[in-house]
Image (cartoon, helix red, strand yellow):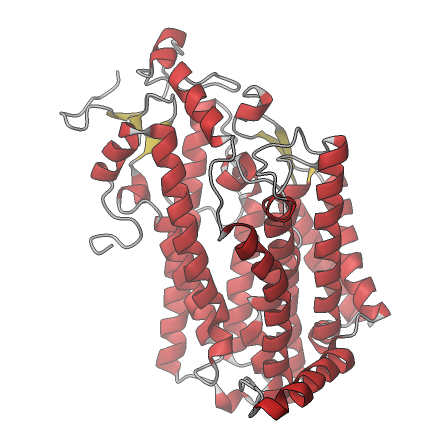
Amino acid sequence: MAVTMDRPSSNLRKRKSNGNLNSDNILNGKSTALLKINAMPTEHGQEMDKKLDEHQSYEFGGPVGVTAMMVGFPLLMYYLWICLWFYRGKFVYPTSVDDIRPFLNKMGQHIYEGAYPTKFAWVTYCGLTAIQLIFAQFMPGLTQNGLPVPSLGYKALPYHCNALYSWYATLLLAYGLHKTGVYRLPWIIENYGPIMTVALIVSFSVSILIDVCGRLFHYGGKPMRLSGNVIYDHFMGITLNPRLGRIDLKMFAEVRVPWVLLFLISLSGVVKQYEEFGRVSYNMWHMLLATGLYINACAKGEHMIPQTWDMFHEKFGWMLIFWNMAGVPFTYCYPVIYMARAPPSTYEFPLWGNIAMFVTLVTFYYIFDCSMAQKSNFKMHQQGEHNPRKAFPVLYGSDLKNPTYIQTKHGNKLLTGGLWRYARKINYTADWIQACTWGLTAGFNTPITMFYPIFFLAVLTHRCGRDFAKCSVKYGEDWDEYCKVVRWKFIPYIY
């Protein structure tokens, strides 16, 4: 039987583990049974979904804001790379009005000499992407249905999830290429600038191709949530679900390209430091561990990604394409770039500092990975599509038994059990603290190496506001009730 708590939390219930589906109760929003694949939400829920699938207002500062980002981010990436690569993290700038032109000429020269898109860079970036596409198409894996998509009449799309096998195959391939001398790992970081330029070119090209195909041929579904402004819609995306064979390109871009390449850049830094100094600093090992934990979490939990907001709602536009294909791998690695260009003595910590960094990383990795798994498992249980997976590491408490939740009039359930009873975005908090340890690996020599946690905090804060606003529209007073039950946004008992 469902357990109902006293009001004002009358909708807070414990999930029945073996409840029978009652369609009448689902339609009136009172069901405590598990939702099934393709189950329709309530009529009220369908109306709210229609609102969310219409363009209502501009985000990110509208056309002006997104234009500034599409122009500014690549320029910022080049500038920060120049500061790290040529000036050991020191900010460089013109010293007078007369110095502006010589300064810009010098910056352009740095880019031409250090970041020209060479044949080697094209082979590296496009080769890695092609290998990951082949793995995604042919490696064994499991098929996981995503959430029912309103724009598809609440059809749930299947996702072929084989990132784990692809990840292991990538490690073996990288080892083999390095040991045979066909492709030595230090070459990645030594050619960082040219590979970054290729990534920028490819990301812009892919975003244009996806945009044009979406508009002309409805590639990825019917164009939706369009504002009528070409630039803004290009930034946000035209369609929701572009696919190549059985590969969902949005999920591919989120997992296979950025985190694999980021790990390989970290591994390249480790090998290069060992070859130059005969040892590897803990700080460099920390970055390898951190990026390894992250890509491994993405790979072993890939079957949980179809349950996320990005897959369910976000369109595949410049924002997701650029940031995943170029932004993530070539900005989150700034500490590695600094450490590869500076003596270890300039950034190493004493033993107690290393221990503190390690304990902080693994603690908040557990909270991050476990909380994400709890919510995704909860959603899959609701759909009757739960596929238990014993991929390393299996974290204690990642699959909740009889968790509490709030049943909404929309038809969905809002999880209030497990780690999610402490904060509405507990995963964001843990993710950000991990990011802080990444940035700190390079010491306190330049703020550029803290780019990831600084930028990530801005992203998470903005994302949180977007999510809460959409949830308020979608769930109405049930969202207000949820916020009373789970009071804290990020930091339990503080904020």
